[in-house]
Picture 1 (cartoon, rainbow, N blue to C red):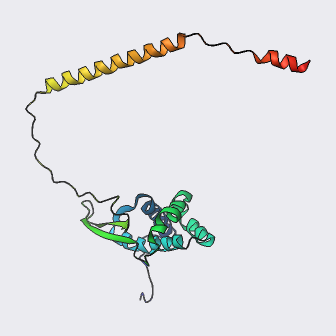
Picture 2: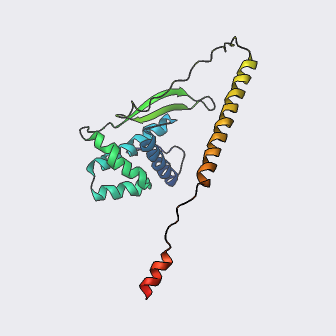
Picture 3: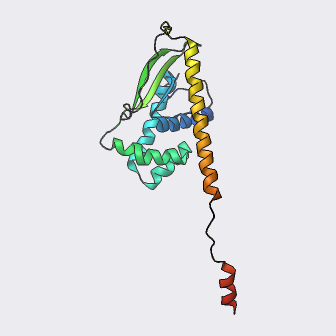
Length: 188
């Protein structure tokens, strides 16, 4: 019986689960959302929200606990300085899990887990339905001529720039008094 046994094993060892959720949490804070299977997303919520709570505390002990779990200094500092302050008035529920359907290869349920306040910056782009390609009325020969003209213009511009560089380098340089004379005067 599994009385009072919390968490999903996900068919992984304890060390693998810990490393996987640490990496997934770091990626979540870095990209604001990640796509994974539904059971992993639901389990990741616990770890991700705990780290945000540590970030809200902001003391040294919380910082050390977050570094112990996440192991990425840059991500932890981003969490403490950028992400956690946005949730000062919020008492929980920092993440959201959205179901996307099933994966084609193995029919696993796929979901997106994202940070709640940052959903406007990174939105999920739905897949576009395939449409028939409409052929353009212009023949391909004209496109090739236009591309050749652009290439020729670029070559001419490069030649002009090279000439300007050569002209600048040919100018005589001003001679500066030598430092050795000053050093000899100081030695006497």
